[in-house]
Length: 153
Image 1 (cartoon, rainbow, N blue to C red):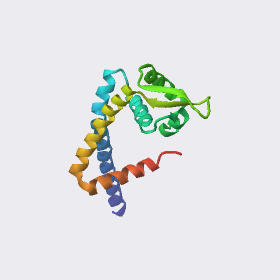
Image 2: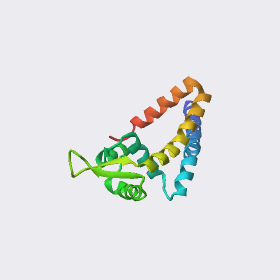
Image 3: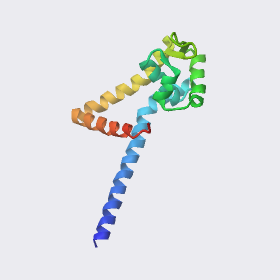
Image 4: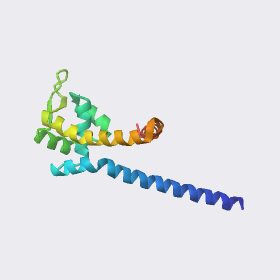
């Protein structure tokens, strides 16, 4: 009897967690829908948005620093970064302190595109946070912080 009760609780919890997974999936689709549309019009993908976002938040970041933030290899970053440079959305320049390294910054056009991409997401978050209230936003941030802490170091 106790084992069956325990199994039912486990199945119930699994169903709740499956619902959470589905919510996460659909929320992510909603969160990325507008940026994906803007990216697709330029022949770009989400990886390009991530690169633009973090270069925009870290002007003159070295390539090695960007690799660390994104948690990807040089090979994974090479093609998207070259494409963004070729499209004049990012500029690279030699590092003033170490000529072997390159520093990255958004161009004026890159700044405009990044603002459109991330601006759509900021607007969406602001709307949802307004509806959820301060406690809802705080709870969401706590969950996201806990998930982010699980990234391998």
